[in-house]
Length: 216
Image (cartoon, helix red, strand yellow):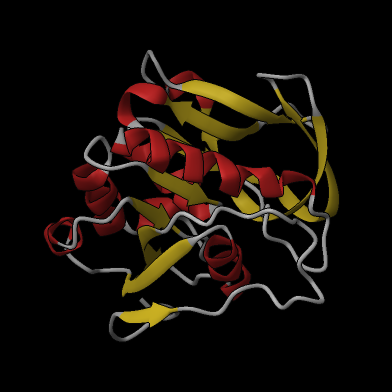
C-alpha cells in the first residue's frame, strides 16, 4: 500500500529508441491492465514496445472493476516485502486467473503461486544481482538474469497441472511458472532489467502470444 499508485492511469511510453534492441515488434494492439505493487517503469515500457495499451491500477483495485474493462490480459507487478503479508492481493489474483491471460513478475509471480494454492517461503539470503543463471526447462536454454528478491515459491506445494518452467541454476529454486489451463505464466526475476541483461525479454513475447491465442 505504501508504494502503489493512488488512482488508475494510462501508460503510453515505449522503450527509448537508443535502448530498443529488439526489432520487428508486434503491430497488433492489446489492452493490458497492470496491478501496481511497486511496479518498475521499464516493465511498462517493454509491454508498450510489444504492442500493449496499458491501464495501471492500484494494488487494492477490485478484480471486478478490472474484468469490467474487458482487458486482453492482466499483469501482476513486482513489489517489496513478503507476499504472505498482502492476502487481499492474493484474493484479487484468485478472482482474475482463469478468466483472462495473466503474467506476473517477482512479487506478481509469488502472488500467483499463492493464489494457485502454493506456499512461499523466505530464502536464507535471497537472490540479488545481475548475473544469475536461469534455465528454461522447456528448451534447455540458459539465460543470465537480474534478480532482487528474498522470497520464493515452493514448487512442491503447487497443484497438479502447474509447470515449473524455469529454475535458478545456483540453487535450483523455482524461477518461473506456467499453467496453460489457466492461461498464466510468471517469472521470479526481471526480464525488463535495464541496461540488461536482456536474455529473458522474450517472456514479454510469450505473454503477447498467449493473449493473441486467447482471441482466436
